[in-house]
Image (cartoon, rainbow, N blue to C red; front, side, top):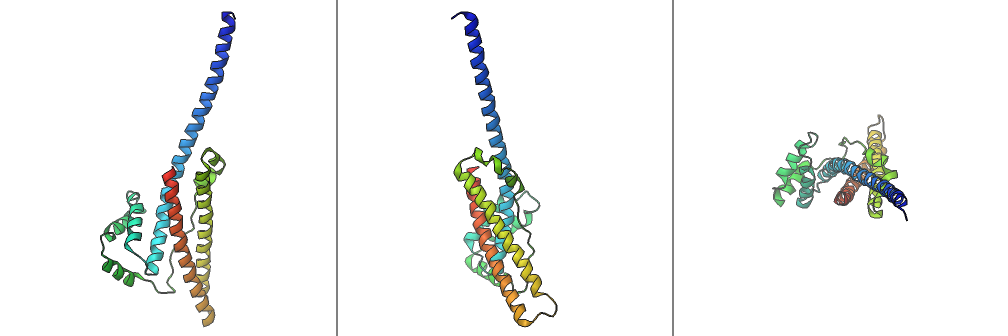
Length: 211
């Protein structure tokens, strides 16, 4: 084989290799970049959802030391965000409460039926926009992402239901029986929201460990 043919073959092989290398690096960069964006969004969402879970525990007098400690760890990661600074300080103070002080807190803060809670539905717009790119990651990571999005749809449905029932309970001229049913449904949906919020926070913790 003469030198010209060798040079042609070497150039051809280098061209293929460089193309594959560029493709690999582009894919790797895209994978790292998307995961970084997902992580940022999940951290923010977890803090907002943990806040709702805390409010629901407080509403039903179910705060305990373990839950406060878990919430405090979430908020510690968001303490520099002005949206969570005050709540992070509250949690940091409460982790030092004794069981008796927590029990007293539950008694004082337990809300009466008929008192509304201001809540907004949750969204993960960045993750939703990257669904087509989830194939870059493991099956387990894809499952947890899609499962979390589905759980958000369910908690949003419960939030919308609670708003509906609360509004019904304040309709003028409502019969006592209808008012009582609407109030009960409001409290039941609040309880459902709290349970789902805690479950979603647990799933997001799993996702964050994988990013």
